[in-house]
Image 1: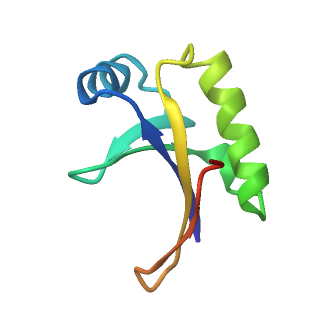
Image 2 (image 1 turned 90 degrees about the horizontal axis):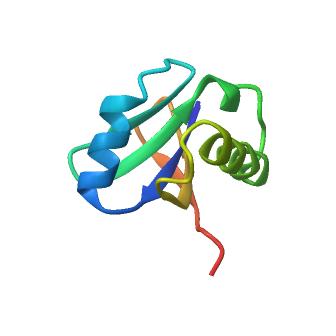
Length: 88
């Protein structure tokens, strides 16, 4: 299973972030509609809170807070996903 965190920002800003930040250990991806932060740092984490905390660190340190964080998704091998909603 893989983790990814939905990014919440303007499409243009996220497209620029994706183009400028090409580090394979932490990358911005798009599924056609939504934007996500994916990182190899998430692989060893076992819960959504840990993933969210690491995503915040990545966004602050590497991506200069260009986008906000949304839901955390755990992608399952069968193609399904579990959604952990962002804090309200």
